[in-house]
Length: 122
Image (tube, rainbow, N blue to C red; front, side, top):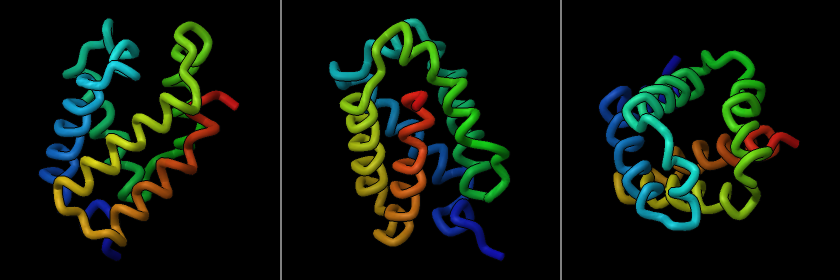
């Protein structure tokens, strides 16, 4: 069975996407303050690992993971829908810039959208 991970090009594609995505995020004053005290090498590696597992269908309870990963950002830094939207905007732009086919980027964006409540700890 071919996974979404395989369809987008595996590790090289995920790595390129996350690197470009974080360049966009860190340049955005709406959301870059959330990363001011974050080890970005560690963050990128964790994100690559998480997305790889999700796209391979191997992630166990991604909602719980996202809730735990973002709970302090919600409670201490006010992470909200506007911020989530900015992140999603950058992800969509990244996928477009890398030429990910529309059907695949749609699947990715739908999966990300489905995690909004977990990210925002609702």
